[in-house]
Length: 381
Image 1 (cartoon, rainbow, N blue to C red):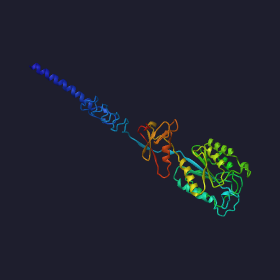
Image 2 (image 1 turned 180 degrees about the vertical axis):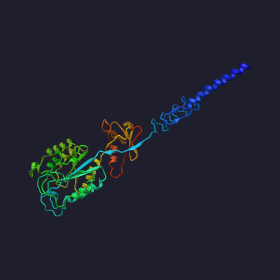
Image 3 (image 1 turned 90 degrees about the horizontal axis):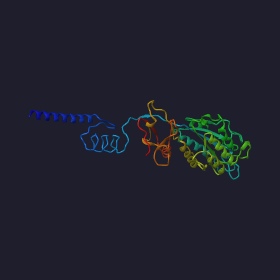
Image 4 (image 1 turned 135 degrees about the vertical axis):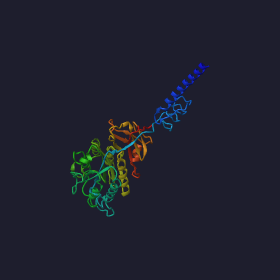
């Protein structure tokens, strides 16, 4: 009898050890996402205390430790860091030939129309409005015109004002009187200035995205310095292509009824922008609209991305547009999804894809792009 009791106690002791050992192992299991979990003997084939068959301690069927049903890891530490837009330079190249003066008549080519207030009297306030509207954008404005004062066919030796940060007020103060227009239209020569080294150093800086915005009310009339010897469409198109290849993209606005559409279209078609035809304007409202349409498209959607921390990983960077996640993609497409992509192999510059860029460029909304590091980059599915 004593032997039997002894054997029973031995069996009890062995069962206690087995059960106790199993409990200790389960209590100390460390699982991703949720920390420590205790399994109470569920019949799901794992040791996490739920009934979904995975090992993360939740009940959604994935393995990330959250309960949202996807397979990401929601728990991580994000830190904000600063990013800088790639600077944009916009040079205004304005036709100040005699036909912009009050009283000019396109039909007679003379100043015999007292009802005409002068095209410059309309373009000037539109420029002021442009500078005011985009004063707080990342656009660095500059200002130039042709011909040189009191000459028929000379182009300037330097721009009136090179592109600079916060140049708007300085440009407004330099805008001539409405009676200032004089002379011919050396458009081809004026464009060529921007192929000369040092003509406008800030504008020509290769670190910037540089754009030339031409406003003209007529056609070139001063090829090779001779009045009434116009450049051809092909010559103007070729000059625009040279500028494009040198890193300067060109827009063209035709103002009034005396423009040469073929010349301006040749410039626009070779300018390297999305505006492959010139924009016609005939009054203050239409020229303001043309200015705004152009400026809105060049608000930079490219950003310099500094290393936020020596421990930061490029695979752990995310961007938010007005607090909404912007998804990473290897290649932009036309999907209506906020997306971004790297611009360089070193991963120091990013570009917002078209849909996100369009939203960032909306001047009617106070948009803001922010950056964080520390959590895995969210990619588009």
